[in-house]
Image (cartoon, rainbow, N blue to C red; front, side, top):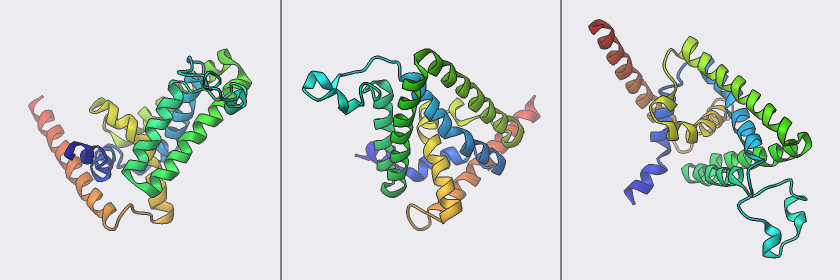
Length: 206
């Protein structure tokens, strides 16, 4: 039970990711590029083999809009992300889940319109552009390596939700619960101080 609670500990996840994204310009760069990464990743995955065909279960082909929507790896990832975000926080998680499925549906229609070959090229180009932008944000403004270098799974899972929650907090003043932002900020500041102390110590040794 404690492990399950830890998995959905929003404060812990948000503080971890926030420690790598404290610079306002770097945060803005991630707000611009993270969800397009989700969209273009689903665009790349659209051509993957469907895990099951609804028509084999007796459902009409129209359920998948004549094959545009595919129950493949992209759909599975979408479902996992959506459920994880709802588990973290019901209100903002529901918004994130809607965005996940919107990306899946939107990328499916775009892939069907472009064709598999062009869709792959567009998705790959988008990935390269967005990831380059994020690495510039870390190297030039944050001056700290991305979170994915320390915890790949946690970074990939939290990135879309982190930027969404940043927008909800900044624009609407939303908090999952009272005192959330203050508690997270304290943990982020503590982590950054620890990181800078270790970096300074390492520089002295070298």
